Length: 500
Image (cartoon, rainbow, N blue to C red; front, top):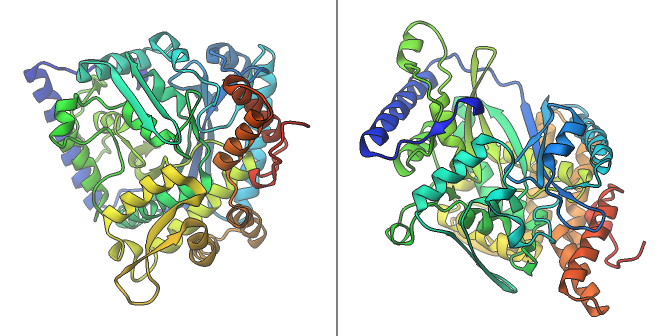
């Protein structure tokens, strides 16, 4: 699809034509959702991880083209910035020893990629935001050599009509005006895919939204933004501002940002795609002229590429995905909440917790979203991003009470959500040994109140106390992070000293 992209049409008649094409796609999706041609559930999950490149000094390396040439595998692809890569793991069935299998495949693939990167004096780093990245590292010239990124950058900047303003106030405040979307490249994430039937999509998406804050709280790994200590998980505010094409006066009128948590629980996948069309003007086009209804009338399955492309320029933290594989359509929930890293073991533990918890919550007779106001879920997400593993969240009280209780994220996870996640993994058919090993990592994080973000900040402050200045402390902490990441020992076991 990337080779066919063309700019969105910003003149009024061009906009109308694009919206007509998107409306036709939406009508085709609505009709398709009503029939029986969707793929039957195979308990399939998928995994993508965005990666950083750094040198032995801990500083970013803008050389993904050279590294990818060395790797020579379609499993690894470019991402927005020249300091980024992405690795894609083939879909797996959620059953048996799938978690250990995923762990082994990731370790093998990342180890190989790291060896190849070292041939050109670079290293693979799994981390939410590379602490040594400076704002000046990410401008339009640092975008990957791919026309789709250049085109997206041009269209988003044209839509905004002025520089993107980055203004994040956490433990320190950072402000910066960017003439491109390149600061988005600082944010690297883990994306968890779950294939579901149309009938089950809403339950799975609502469950994923409800637990997004908990995922952030226990998995935060991005406490620094361009050398400044910000939120415990700083990707969401940075990503939101780096992609915010709304001019300030339009934002003040209540227009939604393209990076969006959402504003309500849903009853079907169609509602999300319809919102995307209603609230967000298209930026790009595939140039395809498919007539989805005619394709359906002729017994075929429409690709809906215009809809899929538009959907891909709206950055929901839980995104609906329509796809066609071997002529059969399917739906996925794409969970985009988690930062990358710290280790493969931590990534798989986060995945186990998510897949188990979503399965259990989606099957409850009285689902949590019927008792948790959506505004509370959104507030939880914000609190978790700000405070990480120390966050206090709102959650429905047990029993038949309709009231909410404020509870620490770690207590909520240990007392209520970990047992649910274990039950969900049992329902998937995951082996108990895998279940216990990876959920045990989550439990230990909660016991010790240690995740990637808390380790980074503790180690950084220890380096400062030892006499290093800010830049040297960040570089030393990053080098130590990289060394410990390669041991694959989960982050809650890492020492916070810089020796070793």
